[in-house]
Structure formats: structure tokens, C-alpha cells
Length: 315
Image (cartoon, rainbow, N blue to C red):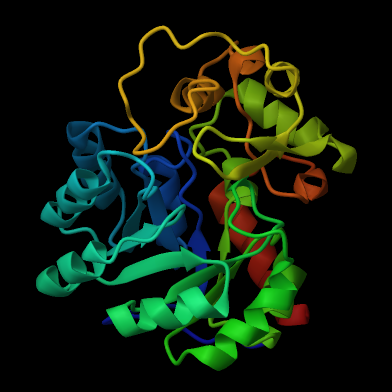
């Protein structure tokens, strides 16, 4: 298969691959810049960061690459507006957002010439996003890691979205290798978003213990958990998942009201932050995609791209 440039707004990238914005602090400057340097779109996960921290990560990424860098901010977080505006003030290339829908972000993007790319899970939402001014949409199926907006597979949703809108459509969920990329593009997508494969990279900010879990994970280890955000979350079964299932998670000691709406069943921010701390995996919420079992080694981003592109060419 011969790949075409992925065009979003006024820019185009030679590798139609967006790296997923995995929070909290999995997708930071080093990972985003490494992806951008390979011709893809690197994404910094702004969710769970302070405004100053996000600005610092954007500046670091821009020092490491001349490529395209975006920011992903979860709509559910209370600081959503301020984080998006902080990213825009740092001349970010694009804004990605999921777990909810903000009409205001399209206005902010238009006023500042920054493409806005919402994550959707239906043709109806994609059409609304296009009307509001989205430059592209990411369509995410049930195979994705983290918070899910659907229980339908990507291959069922994607063709409907591609027929419904004229803007670029990016497929996400369960994409692990070049064959997967080719299959999604054959369904009509202009590109793909890949999260778990890049979380299991050298440049990922995940702890070494978490990366080891990616390698060890089997298909049956991937489970769903009810997140305080109000959406199901997909990840690898571990001790913390067992605590959640049994209703035995630690009490929240210092709630800072980081989410607009929260069930307070446990502190999701602390649980996700622990995934980046060595030795804290028993207190960590380890998000991953449905096909994490296909990953058998931690690789540099450059090697991941080399293998992806080789597989795509032969697909």
C-alpha cells in the first residue's frame, strides 16, 4: 500500500499516524517529539498537568523537533478550558479532545488558527463536530485503551463516519502493526491514531514496571473498569483493578475537584499518575488497548515506525 499525506488544517504529515495522548504523563515531550521526528503527529497529554507543566512540555517538545505537535485534553477535567488556552498560547499545532464534547474549543481554535480534532464514537457526533468547525475527527472503537465512548468495534463505526463527513477521519482502537494501519485506511480513513503501541516504547514516560506489564499481558488480562469519570475504562488487570472490582479502593484523602463530574469511588488522577512511578503499579490504573498482548518488546519510536511502514508497504 502507498500511503498518502495526512492533511489536517494547513499542515500535512508524510506518515498518517497520530500518537495517542495518554494521560497522566505517559505522553510527554520526549514521546511526542520522537513521533513527530518520524513524520507522524506527536501528542502531549495535558490532562492531569498544571498549566505551567503543560507549557513546559510543549516547549521541550518544540526544542526536540520541527515536526507537528498537538495536545490532548480530556473534556471531563475542570481545567479543560485553561489547559487548551495555555496550549494555544504556546503555539501548539493542534488540539485533540475526548470524553465529552466542547463547543467552545472550536471557537478558540478558529480564533487562533489552531485545528481542533475531537474524538468521537458515532457518525452523529462526527457530523456535529464538522458543523462546529472540526478540522478532522478521531473515530475510536471499543478496542482502544482508557476511557471508552462505545462498545462497538472500530470497523463497524468507521465506514459510517467516513460516509457522513467530508473532513479527514482518523481511525483509533486496536491498531498495533502496519497491517492494522492498512486495514483501517482501506475502510476509508485518512490516517490512524495509535496509543498502546507507543506507550510501550523507549520514549514513553510510563514506568519500567508498567512497560513490563505490557509485555507480559495476555488477551484475557484486558478488562473494563467503571471510572469515576462516568465512562468505562479499559486496561490491564492488576491488584488495583481487583480493588476497584471489590469496592476496596483507598479513600480519597485530598480531593482537589479535578473533574467536572466524579463519582469519588477512587481518585483516578492518583491511580493514573502511579502508572508513571516506579514501584507503584499495585496502586496504578494501567490503561491499555484490547490487543496489548500483541506487543512483545519495548522499542524506540524510530524502530516502531520503521516496522510499521515496512508492513504497510507490503500489506
